[in-house]
Image (cartoon, rainbow, N blue to C red; front, side, top):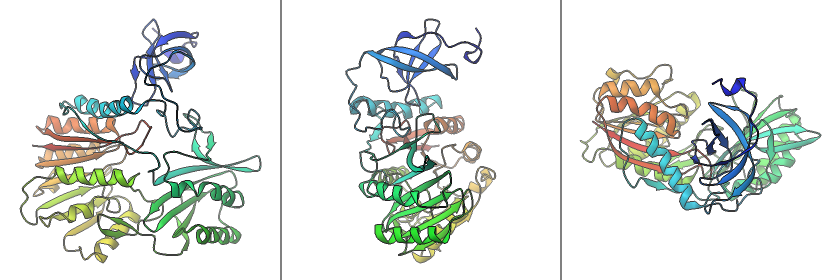
Length: 437
C-alpha cells in the first residue's frame, strides 16, 4: 500500500476514537487500518472525521462533528482552547485525564523493559500555577500580537487570558501588549520569556532589530511601573544585554538564593519543583556514608543542587552543566552560601562530551535532569559505570523510555516512579524515576 504522502486524502468518514496518543490527539482507524489523528477528541467518541494531510503513518484529520460525545467530555475553561497550541486536553474530565498522564509514564517504562508500580504516583497540576512562559510576538497590520502559537501552526494566538498562568504574570499581558506596540526593536517578530522569581517577574525580550534609546527608556519605565526586578534584551540569538536592574533578580532554590540568568530554565511551577525535589531526595540510598559523593548532571542554576547539598549526610556534589550563564549563576550562589567546599560546578556539554564510565568511579548516585531530547549518550556511560543508584528526572516520557533501556540492559531495577503534571492540560509530563543495581 502506498504511503499517505503519495495518496489523495480519503473522504470524510465516521470513525470511533480508540485512545489518546502521546501528543494528545485522539486516534482512530480507517477501514483499511490507516490511523487517523484527531485533535480535541476523546476515547469512545464517534466522530465524522475529515482527513487533511499526511501525518507519520496516517492522516491528520479534523472532527467535523462529534456524533457521540464521551461522558468524560467537559467544557474547556479557556476561550482560546482549540486555537491556542498551549493546551490540548482541557475538554477531558480530571479523573480520565490524570489516568492518561500516569499511563504515559507507565508505557515509557514498559517500553524500556521495566514493570511500573501500580498504582503509579501522580502529582496533579493545578490552574493558575505556571510561573514560566515563552510568548511569541508578531507585528501585523499595525498591531502587535502577543501569545502562543496555534496548534501545529506558525500563527500566533493573541492571548487575553490564560487559566494555567500565574495571576501575577496574567496581569502583565495587557500592559505588555501596549509596551511592545511602541517598541521600534520589534519590526516583524520577537519573543518574551518571563520567569516569576521571588523578586518578581524577570523578563527577557528577543527582538529582530536593535533596541533604540527610546525603547530602553520605555522598558525601564515598564519595569518601574510593574515591579519587574530586571529586563534584558537580545537581538535574534545574541546573548542578552541587561537593560535595567531595579533590584537583585533572585529566587530561592531549596533555601539558597540564586540569581539566574535572563531567560533561565526554571521548573514550570513551584509545586512541581517541590514534588521533583521530594522525589529525588526519596530516591537517594537510605544509608549514605558521611560525605558520600553524588554526581549531578544538567544542573542548570541549581534547581536540585542545593536540595542535594542540604542532605543530612553532608554530601559532596560534583555538578555539571553545559550553559555558561547557568554555571556562572550556580557558582555565584555556591560561593555566597559558603558551599564551595562541598559543591564543585563544572561547565561541560554533556551531549557532545558525556562523562565516561570511568569518571563515575566512586560516586554513590547519579542524578540527572536532561532537556527534552534526553541523554542517550550519557545514559549509556552511566549504565556502563554501574553506579549503584540513578535518579532520572525527565520532561519527555519518550526519551526517558529510550534512555532507560540502557539501564535495564545493564541490570538495573526500577525502584520508584513518580509522574508530575507540571504542564497542565498539555501532552507533556515531568517524572522522576529511581533505578538501582
